[in-house]
Length: 263
Image: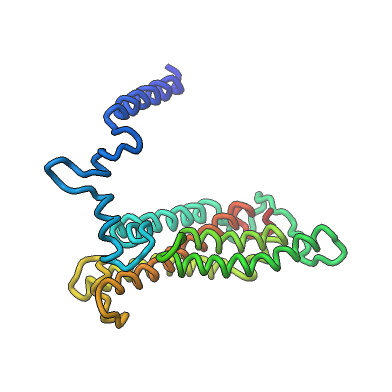
C-alpha cells in the first residue's frame, strides 16, 4: 500500500479525535468556565488569582511578565533553551568550516555606497534606523516587567537590527559588528544567566527560581522587590539568547553555512 495512504489515514483519524475533543471545551469567553471561575467546590480560578495577587507578590505591573518570568519560570526557561537548541541544530547542520568546493558562495557586494544612488538611500537609512531600533529594543527589555515588552520581544528587535545591517550592505558588515564568536558566546551566556537566577536560590536553601530569597543580594526591603529585580535579570538573559540565535540562524541560512557572501 502507498505510504501516503497510511499518512492520510493517520491524519484523518487524528483530526477526528481532536474535533471530538473540542466538544468538551467550554464556550470561548465563557465567564463560568473553570479557567475563569474555578472548579465548583474546589480550587479557585487561577486567572483570578493572578489578576488579584500577582502585583502584591511581585511588584510587577505587567501581569504577563509576572506570570511568564516568575509563576511559570520553568516553562519560560525551557522555551529559551528550545530557541538555543534550534540555533545549535541549524549551526550543526549547515555550518561549513574550511573550503567547500560544492558550496555556492555569492560574491559579497561592495560595502561602499559611493556612486550608487540606491545604496546611498538604503545605507543612509539603515545607519539612521539601526541605532534607534537598538535603543528602543533595550528599552523594551529593561522596561518589559513594567509595560508591554520583555526579553523575547527586545531580543527579536536586537537580532533584526543586525540582520538589517546585513541586508543593507552584506553579511561581512554585520559580522564585523557581531561576529560568530560573539553571538555564540552571548547565546550561551543568556541561558547561563537565566539558570543562574534559578540555582542561586537553591544555594541559599530555597527552591529553584524562588526569587524572593535574593532580597539580600538586591538590598531590597522585601522579597517582592527581589522577585521584580530578578525578572529583569531573567529578561536580559532571554534577550541575549534570542538576539544571538536569531542572527546566527540568518547568517547560516543566508550563506549556506559559509558565513561568506550571504544574500
